[in-house]
Image 1: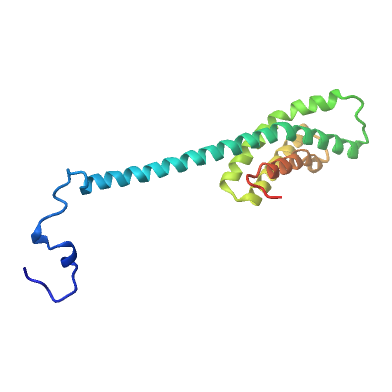
Image 2: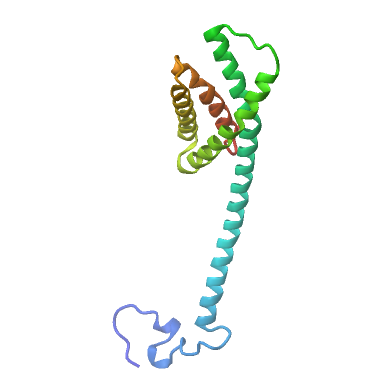
Length: 176
């Protein structure tokens, strides 16, 4: 056995002439089994993280949709009547108008909730809230402009205010 002058760890692990360690891959402590075990451990950790992430996403989505389903129509209805009162001086004479308004705003609430969920995944917290608010404001302005109403920009608040409130309330792990 001939040794070179440079530093070597052959005295610890052995020289290549002493035999190949990796040739015996079928025994329980062999390299192939160790690789399979390590791959199994890595996949197990990955699956645990995927499970936790899916649960967190599920909880956040359900919370977001419930907030939008119950609060958005109520805030939008109140905003609509506030804007109408300020612009025209009209007073609500019965509760059938607000009840109908609440039902009308359920559909847009769910659409804005989907946009908010998309914005919250792609953007950070504050830009996500702003993007959702601007989307709802823009859709409200376009809807009222299509109907031919004047004071279009003021009616954008009917969609913008509830979108901002609901988007802010649906932020996960918000600390007060």
